[in-house]
Image (cartoon, rainbow, N blue to C red):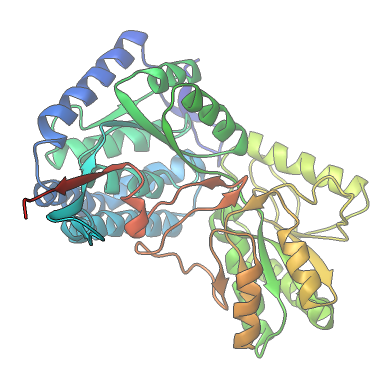
Length: 449
């Protein structure tokens, strides 16, 4: 059976499969991407490239029905959320098209001594490899391809094996938008072939969004070959509740933070750290709200459901209590709350990638911060309190790449996305997203006095 296959998680049926790339096809793809970089990426202006990127965004919206259908079929996402994802992807392409000339403009450097002038010129670096995940097939590609194609780099794109149909549809969009052959190449590659691609001297960098294990493996290969890496890995984001003027609204924010995309979001709120004076009321309302809302979409696969079930079994065996809202059915997994998790519990420092929230009681602001930071991850975080000074004080102390105060689902195309610790390094989106893979070349012109 081929590595790249669409197995509808709602039914378990294999509805499409695609042949894995041959080694000859991989070699040809690298050659095409390198040729496109030299003939197109290095010779076009930011405005010319931006026009093509803008068209990519337009085509996402024109083909939203088909793209959404494929995403739902591949990983079980609710159709409304699939459409939201595609709209967000389109907005990313538009953002970089709108801002390319500004972001890539020469930056003057004020000289402290000597005559003449100096500038920093941002230039493309060449062929890049993107390794993308299954949970946001269109959005994740946009975060990588949008800024880098605008900068003049060319793209080799390896998507998750369960998302080959949307991968093919997006490759068609880039071709139809007018990108030359080799500028964006979709690859159904194996892990062994990925290692070969990274090692190739024509490939200048790699960006991966995925698991901690995959990130470590890719970073090791890239390090041996002296290639730059951007990694966006897992997260066990704290959702800290220190106070509330409207507990129902705070609970609804908690539901939205945990259960979007059936809980399969790297920067979802996963550990709900609640001050003791609000804890009992918060937990009661949280449980009631998720029972009312229900979960009617599957996880991405039966294997994903198996992994989550195994984690929860270990947690309960170690003394935690699981308040489930139903029974598992294949890839369909019931929402739930996990309470009574102490530091000795094996899941205390793990990421639960599904519709289960871990809730922890704390007795003070200091304990809340310590608990929030007691994790190997450092992607996003959330702070809820009506005390503005407290909110900023706590936000300052959190070991995370992102902090959202009194709100959730507030990501934006202009806001940098990324983490610290074992959540990875580098940033995507915003101004910083286009800075990762450009040569910030110093040009110093010296004139005679």
